[in-house]
Image 1 (cartoon, rainbow, N blue to C red):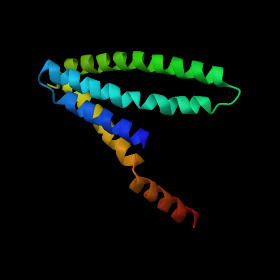
Image 2: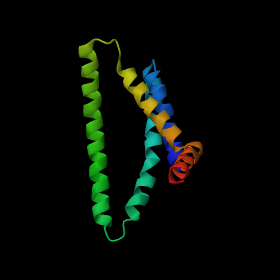
Image 3: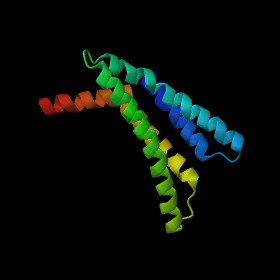
Image 4: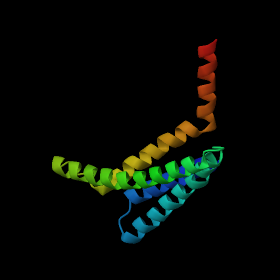
Length: 128
């Protein structure tokens, strides 16, 4: 439930950022994105705690991957904006937020109980 809530808040924040016109709206949307991302930390730490005997390795892997993820996201977003400006597509930074909101909607659709039931049905049909 925490996972679905975090994804939902994050998606709403990304969609709000893509439609923001004023700086205050963008800042508020970024707060929502941060709250959604904050929900993932307890989930990730529960996976780390489950690694009996390898907690040190799991913590270092978690720390390194979160740092690498933040760095790569800034780099990839910058490269995407440069690429869009070279193509003169008329798109702006808002399209990046819109694309991320679309990814959030897809994640939500894949994590709902209906999607779980469909996967279970598909698996039972495959096994039969």
